[in-house]
Image (cartoon, rainbow, N blue to C red; front, side, top):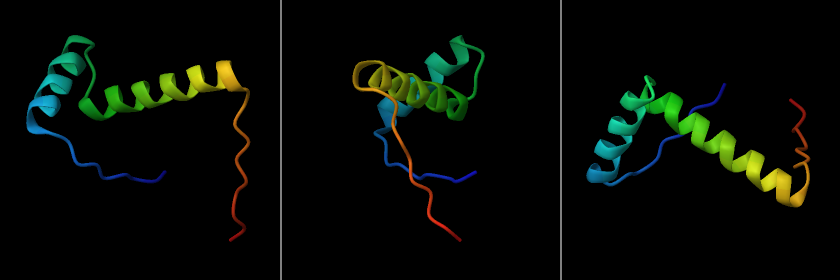
Length: 56
């Protein structure tokens, strides 16, 4: 699993924490759900995203 660092306005982060708490989730879990939902919506409209993995 990889990690990602983002910059976020303090007010928006506070609001994210409220939404996450309402859903009984951590802010991290809430963000992952939002990203997953965004990707799923994109794929419904545009087709499956093919990812080419780099060889190690």
